[in-house]
Amino acid sequence: MFKRIVTVALAFVGLSVGAGFASGQEVLQFFVHFGVGGLIGAVVVALLMGWAGGILLQLGSFHQPSDHNVVFQRSFSPIPARLLDIAVIATVFSLSTVMFAGGGSNLNQMWGLPTWVGSVLLLVLVLIAGNAPSERISSVIAWTTPLMVILIIVAFVYSVWTFSSDATTSLDSLNAAAASTSSTLPNVVIAVISYLGFSMIVIVSMGLVIGGEFINTRVAGIGGVAGGLLFGILLVMVAFTIYVNVGDVGMDQFPMLSSVTIVSGAAGTLMSIAIYAMIFNSALGMTYAFTCRFVEDRTSMRFHVVYSVTAVVAFGLSFWGFSNIVGHVFPVLGYIGAVLFLLLSVEYLRRRTQIKWVSNFRVRGSWPLRKGQKGGSGNTSGATDKNSATGTSSAADKAE
Image 1 (spheres, rainbow, N blue to C red):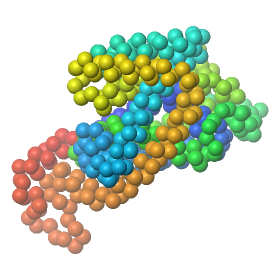
Image 2: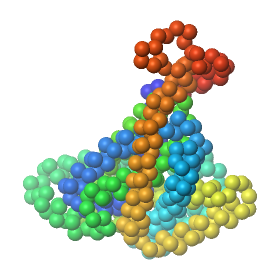
Image 3: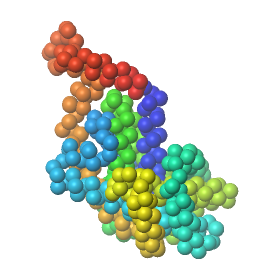
């Protein structure tokens, strides 16, 4: 059971720690810009992400969906379900556009190349990789998230050490430097709501599907809580690291990359490569997922045409600029995601008892006893379908 919980927690972190997060730009605009208040906001989001991860994966485990729309249709009336589905699709395309912008900014900041070079290179890679087996691509870039986490921790520890040993740096000066950075958000409360919602809408699709791989909703829920809290810890680390170095990195497109480079030039080079690999991974995955929502046959010529057109359109829109897209598109998606967070929270609370009962039946082949009810023959509801109960129990044992 412990191994399964760790596995789902790490999978959740892998979904959450995308290229936008690792660049530090979204953390800068949503939290660091507001100084110490922003750091407190990051802690609040960290705690709420534990709840979000828990309910998301438990609902996925309960519904066993093939995609997010299955859960939406079962949980909400037709119009809200359709609107939320459209919002998720729009998020997928928006993130694809952000990745193309980020690819250009990454190579520009680290290597001094024109921004269009990194974006064009990414477009070529995405178009080529769209015809390659997804398993092979995933195995090549699987190392990026662990490397990213290690570099974030190193930069955080270094920042804590330098901040604690530097008596000349005051919170007032850091707050002033943070306030001079750019952000489209009016205050930290709105930033917390928007960022929580943005994180939710980014992970909801794959999060529900991953939850559906677990028969035992308790295992899925604990793994989701652990994954959400782990992501939250990384969020606080990134926010603090950029805050301490905001005077030096606050105006950069990739402030976290700059913060790691302060620690070591070699570490900065590794960070740049890892971020670009994550950008490629995200651009490929988002473009592929967007195409799959409109073309079912993934081997057809129509699929490849739609995939290529989607990539080219996202590439064209990316020239609006990485920080501009993060500052204007992400908050809007966050507001929609905040509504999704509330709706899924209500849905979870409404079905909490039912989720527990169904999970118990899957795992043990029997319904849990009501308060005051005596055990006896064991499974009464399940007795009508003994083979089904046995098969489910066996599968659940494997899941644990």
